[in-house]
Length: 142
Image: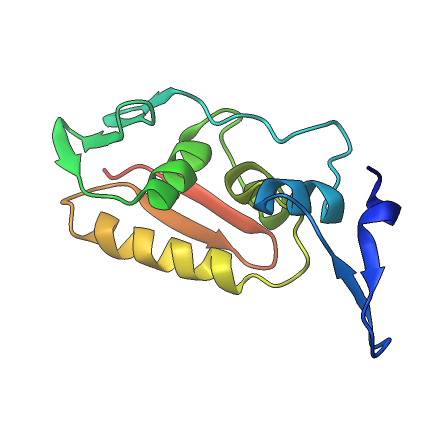
């Protein structure tokens, strides 16, 4: 069934209603990827004394585990993966959330804020720096 077949008019003719099987199907219809699906997250990333193992749900800094949520782990893994440097809002949305960036950065800022709070609790831990109007980059502690 095509997207056009899934669009149904409401009885009051206010707007279209999209019927789909699940959220991933809706995302695929609303945010088609130019080159297919977003890149899968790396299974594990090591950068200096930071280690992020998504398969084992474990993040360590200097051998000490950090309690992070799934979203925070994926965000940190992306920031720590090559190519190192600034990750734009668009790239983070596509790789962490699997959707297109629509200009609203609130969800991303909120996730980064929670991640920063947890990383600040670690002595000389990694830091997430903002590149205003562009995105974020990861800096390791001294």
